[in-house]
Length: 314
Ligand code: ADP
Image (cartoon, rainbow, N blue to C red; front, side, top):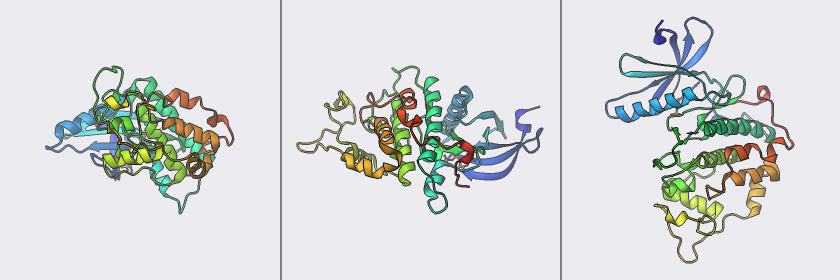
């Protein structure tokens, strides 16, 4: 039986920039559902977008982990359409959850459970030499059993070869680390860790945290919050192509300890220490995914909420 006849599209679930997502049913197993992402291919963007879709497919097929969306199949229909059959994740995403302050309350134990799942998923990506490169709240989807899964591997790429130059124009701006804003061409898993740190902060604050409206504005927000990157706190930074040398008296020190204690009190001193170590300006000083998982916050009180007891936005 041809792959494309194994699934039947039913209702539309949503629409993104490059794709329409349908709920699908497995023909041989009535009552078993999947998500079918139909990639829009129009003449103008054809090559670029088809490449993104193919990258998504390649990386997802190689990764199998409870916190990474499962890819079931890929097929083309009507010669031009690319269909990606994915695990159905019907309970919305972490952005819906962060925004639902009228209807959903959550606390430190819930944040610890969600962040634990995200960090284990990212650790698995990095252990398999895959950078995600677009971690943000709305790419973290919620499965029927309450678990969080990393989705949208459209930008992911293997980083096995650190000497290959990589494009710096990745990651939605608000989640972009300083080295990419300075146009570093050789970067590492540390870029994802920064994005995960921003996600962590947003879940705690229940609002977007560093919403820069231009790349320069984003760097300003980062300097205001963490201090200005200099050769003292980040040896080598001034060599990056996009580095902006601060003028005399323009070196900012970042927000005081009190800001962190007050804004992120929910997660306690250990949580704050983890958050800040994920958001070190210097990517070499940022924790690796493995170090993140070894942090003392995970085993401190409160213990993470069991996944079947987590709130969701649906
Ligand atoms: P975006 O451009 O917002 O990243 P996508 O093209 O990935 O969007 O998906 C569009 C919408 O389809 C999402 O906002 C979500 O509501 C829904 N969706 C995507 N993937 C799935 C899935 N695996 N299961 C259920 N719904 C999904």
